[in-house]
Length: 341
Image (cartoon, rainbow, N blue to C red; front, side, top):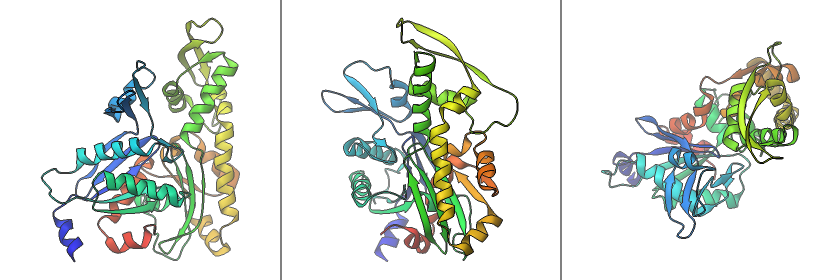
């Protein structure tokens, strides 16, 4: 009763704490923040000088006394203090300072998260001033966010491809029947592109350039005879002089083949371990793709070709998790059912 009364005076928040981006949902307002999970700090003092979009602009361009970094790696906290500072920044930015009551916070986390990692997320949220903290597994949050009937006795398969992890889950009756998480996502694809261009074209490019390449000409499956190209700039590894080269879609598809294959294999493993009755439902309902990785061109066609099942890309895959954790803010009964103990 007391917690419900407190809820009237605070702006409860839902957070998708992602490796690549952090999204914040405020009860009654919707998504109010969508920024890169990047922090810029002063090396000598450890003081945070920028967070989010401003900090991302500094990546790869900082002097020796400043470092711009991602405090989350492969979907989990790599630097606890910096994650706490980042969360604090986002929460303070969106929480109404007129509210004298700290907010209740629901956070989406990868399904393969360990007890130690759960504790780190909770501690970071507590340090940012949360009143109550609930953790919800990202595939469950994504399923709620895209509107799957998670409370029915039917099988729903969701694949959430984020920056650091890919979560595959089969959901029925508000619970995860089977889940598998692999620490492969958009970041591993970017890394593969950097290494491919380094080895094949003897040119060094940055992570941000690799991400632009992936977005513009990246694909997982050849759809037609068109072979898109893109001009990119980097540093010649032989002469050390900046240069411009042309890269083609076929080359990028070859470059990201390994991480894409790992994602496909994870999905096939999940299908093999799904109970037969629920597998029959998936044949009818198909596989739902969410997360930023779902936007990779041709990934749905590759999965359809590999599994023979219908594959549907969510309407707004990037916001599926934060919309899901946002929806459960309004329903405490469902929140308590789907939250991790």
